Length: 351
Figure 1 (cartoon, rainbow, N blue to C red):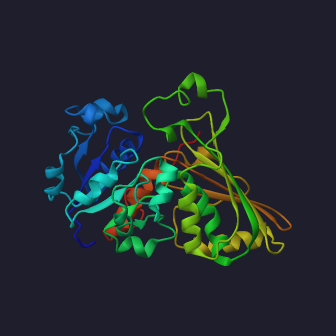
Figure 2: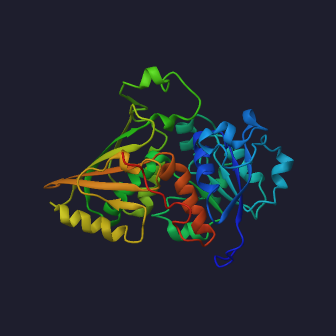
Figure 3: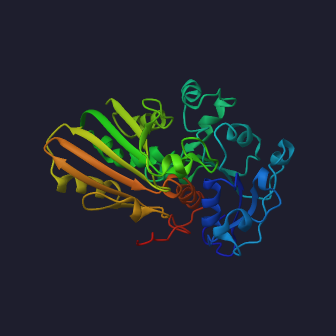
């Protein structure tokens, strides 16, 4: 489809429409001027209207959820242009290889992010059944892989923590200015744990609590290091720690970096401004960003603190939008030759 064919729309299917990622895809794509949601699956909610399941969309669409498609139905799914896989880890690897070759695929899970099947098994706790397909997927961190995304048939959307971390480190790695160990102290809201309640995400447990989880074992670490090695000479040790915030949306990462040379705040801002010169959704702010400024938006806000050789990069984003569905839409826009911001021009709320 050419970008000047203004009367045509990309027909999209969303697999896994009842989860938080699928809900955000529906919220964005139902009102995207160049997309038409033709199909949305949700096994437990099959037959129900989208607005019955996601009450924020009540009265805004007559679309109904369908059951997951059987393998033979996947192979014949030629009435859509693009499939978004918003499924739990481990399911996309069974579905993507069965889709018609002409259908573009954007996977929001971790199934095709890693090149190493051994690393996938270690961090996701299951064997990869189609490891040869990982090379078919472009890593969809839009601001870093923009040109590869434009020509891609299949995209592996980055993890939310990985997005916040990589956007905060990419300019530094590209310039080769990091001297040693990098420490990432990252925190996330409860929606990052998915729509199904669990012991550690139940509101009474989390509402007034704060704790670390998956120390030295978070599944986003290998994709972060894999990507940094492609950006520049990445040889630093990465200490990556994740924490549970008593909020619903948002990721906030404090990234501590030892620089090779003393650097000024002005020089840091210039370096980041040049690197993200064409990246509308990366905003540089004074001091610390705030997750309240980016909630429900596709922006990643980045700020800095400097003292001699020590630099702290702060990054904040909405884990469900820039960290998932918004970035997936941003990638779809590039894949079809649309303006990168199409369907994503919404501001946050204040307060």
